[in-house]
Every structure is written in structure tokens, then in C-alpha cells.
Image 1 (cartoon, rainbow, N blue to C red):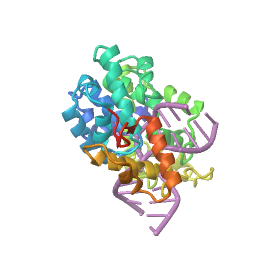
Image 2 (cartoon, rainbow, N blue to C red):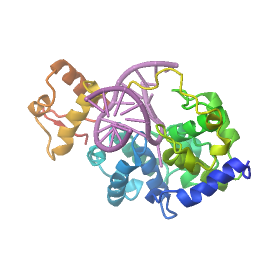
Image 3 (cartoon, rainbow, N blue to C red):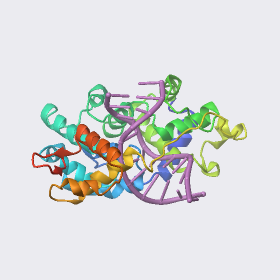
Image 4 (cartoon, chains in turn orange, red, yellow):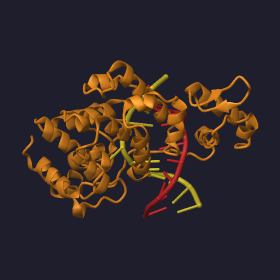
Length: 291
DNA sequence: TAAGCGTGGCC
DNA sequence: TGGCCAAGCTT
């Protein structure tokens, strides 16, 4: 499969069109790649870039981060969103330091066992950091395959076994080529085969795209999102945590109560943050990021 | 399995 | 303007 026109065209396109992202450079450590993958979960590259630079400057190895309280990771996470990722990345650093001699594992199953690392991230780290052959199936790749192979504009909401089988069937046989292929298809999805306005004129495989060849039929499946935010517990959680991040000292309850009027919802959100380990209720009644 | 989980930019 | 979208994971 390594020399079929499909993969050859995508790989050639990547050679000249790939973005120069710091975690893709030859000198990037496995740890720095792992950090980038966690940060990039549901968060755009442009917002990850400065956060990743600052993070790697402060904690260049897992051991550096493992020495810190988890609350420092949450504070450093700033406004990247989904702050549980910061907690899990800290837990990753501890596990790697204590159980893997400070080295990011290269085994897919071991990576999968680490907190916050699921199927995609385990494959991505094994492939991008260690040059192994794994199917990479993120939102970009799912969209590219849905269009070029299946002929539909958008993939199903939840990943199917058919998608996994397709991604594995397309994987080039040689590990180094497969690793290049994975990041190349992702990049194609991110830059050309985008969700809203795909730039088919710039696509190296437009001539083989089932969706384009079918005349780009409109999506006719079920509604695909519904991710409202305003007024949700998530918004309240965000406001509460922002107060704690901004304060070098523990804060009094009044400071938290000021961020949201609905007391029932506010208490529910605060309890959930405590339950998640993102907030530490102190004995004196104040609240802090976890120690 | 589907819902919950932040944040910000874009059209 | 506001819904949609962004390198998912966990329960």
C-alpha cells in the first residue's frame, strides 16, 4: 500500500505543505510530543502553540512536572479548556517517573494505560514519537476518509469499527512510511479537507475523492452537534476555576459565590470540581487548587 | 453508549 | 448573531 497513488500523492503534498510545528521537529522529545497531543485534544493548534512553549520551558521532562503539585499543572493550563487534561497530564508525569524510569513508554498498550491517553493519543505517540506503525484516526482523518473513501461529507458522530478497519487497511506496510502517512492525512484534513469549506482545488487526491466525484452531495444524516455552553455547569466550572487560577493564595467562599448567581447550580459545579480533584476545600473554609 | 467536560474564533 | 468547530477521554 505504500506506493499506491493515494498515499504517494498525500505524502508528496505533505512534504511541501506541512506546517513547521515545534513538536514535529526532529529534536522534539517523546515527552514534548505527548504534551502536545494532550493539549491538542479538542483544542486548536494556534491556541496550543504558546501554551506548549511555556509548558516545555518550565517542565522539560516528566520528572520536572512530577515534582510539582497537580494544582500547578492546572494553573499553568490557563485557559486551554478541559482542565481535567492538566490533572491527567500531571498524573502521566508521575506514572512515567515512578514506573517507567522517567521515559515515555513506546508500547501502545502501556501508553493506553496512562491517564488521559486513549486510542488516538496512544497511537499518535507511538507513531510520531517512536516511528511505529499504527492507524491514526482523529477527527481530521475520519473526515478525509469519509469523503474520499465512503463518499459522504461527514463521518458518523461516534467512531465505527468500519472506520477503524478502513484506516488499518490504508496503512502503509513500512513503519516509517506509516508514521509519515498518519501525520500527512491529519494535516490534509486540517488544512485542505476542512469541515466547513474544503479547499478541493488544492487537494492532491481530489481526482480520487468519492464525495467530490459524486458531486459533493449534501450531508443528510442526523444533526451532528448540540454543544451548547452558555448557562451550563461547564461555564460555571470555568468561572470558578478561573478565580482559583488567578489567585496565588487560597480564596474565600465569597469570592467563588460572586461568579454565578444561581446558588444551586454554583454549588453543584463546585462540588463536581472538588470531586474531580480540580479544587481542594481547605479545613479553614477556603478553597485552593490541589496541592 | 451517550453524555459531560472549556474556551475562543469564525462565518 | 449564534451555532459550529477544534490532534478526545472517561464513565
